[in-house]
Image (cartoon, rainbow, N blue to C red):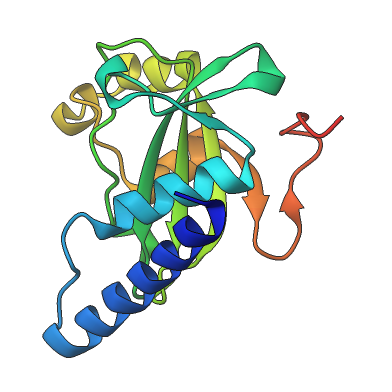
Length: 164
């Protein structure tokens, strides 16, 4: 499949997901994860890995093949703090987790990255049973992580230095 065809399909998926939510009042299951995976790989210049690898979704060839787990959350209102991200696979091999935040049109507006050590340290210190299972809120992930990309500014050079 050509890159053009892939971009066109993702664009159509964004529109379908947004229209479905507006019409049905609930999100279309599974679509946001696929869109976010595509966006993170494209915007952060990552290389996808085979699904059978497990534990991570992509590698960053510009940062010594760093193994990256990709998560997503579509924000439909301003109450970002109470929303949760998908369960982080704590027991598998990965180096960092990237969280793609998308607006109601399923367009990315921010991407955050948290290192494995930082996440595991939080989980170890937390008294929350959810955190111990790798389930975090968007607001907690933002606190632990660093902003890697924004819609307005693109990649944050002091954090994401693979543009050199």
